[in-house]
Image (cartoon, rainbow, N blue to C red; front, side, top):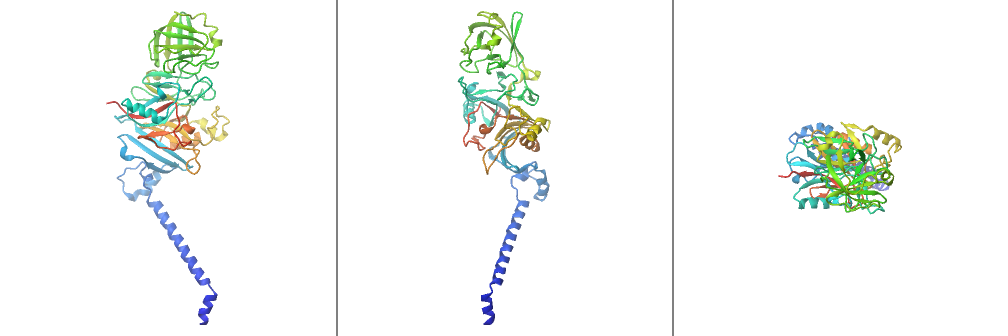
Length: 451
């Protein structure tokens, strides 16, 4: 009785036993978790490894995974045609990355682009553009938002590309290299465009227009096609691809007809001036173009050009290989060159925008879009951002480093932020920053080839 009474008065043995059981339970749970982590990585361990490899080499497989990848999941695998893949990566820094891949040597797929609403002005969602393509018998597999531009302004431009766009061989848009907001820095790594030659070579270079208007012994330099005409870009050609009218103010404009359309990367055609308008905002004819001149330039030319004046228009894109490019799209910054991160991105990361050529978000984490390639594959990429607890995005340097880590050798930065969206296999697969798909200027595509 005395022993039982002492046990009731002293509860310590019971407490010690309970604590011991709790510690044992925690130890067992942790051991199970460690065992699962070591032996079960369903999607990640397949990276770079043949599916027929035995499970006994899982340790070797884990080492093959890029150091910056926490997880890699294959999406919609049952719908993959030959040469196409769709993945979601989890970056170790806290971002979700969506990647559509195309094998470059596959016979049934190709890279292509599509202009929003088939003209420069106005914008369109990727979903809407892909539906329009399907109605034409074109089957897109994946698409990412592409070029930079303005969304609206007081001139009535409800969307307008600032970058190069070559579609089905037509030179739709090309800017002058200008160091100002929205345009690409005029440097080897800044103004960058991606193009494909007829023999399948991938190009990633700065492209220049080299346009000339020859009237008798006089030559006028054409600085851009379907861009804003102002004091920084004084002579611009507007084609029917721009829209109904030029939307210029106070420009001196000349309507040119009896010339061959569309414009191309290597182009020569005679023309005749059919109208002169000193007030700007000329109607663009379906069978001609409008030459707009900024007033200070027009002072030297308006007496030399009148109705019925004839001449020759020449265009020769450089580098020379771009003269035959059938499909080309511009971004604003080159990220990787031959597997090396562009040196300026180091400065972005180190200087926190002090050398950012006015691209003030370069050293901060944001949603991003990009195109990359190596000798075997082409990649369309979107990085989600501005979503705490899910994905905060990347800086330009982090993005280039991640791309390099997963095997991309060359890459170009596309428009990002809330515009970043990857459409693939019938739907938007990422989570755009605003929670909905934004209208954009053009789309970089992976699609099936025509039969």
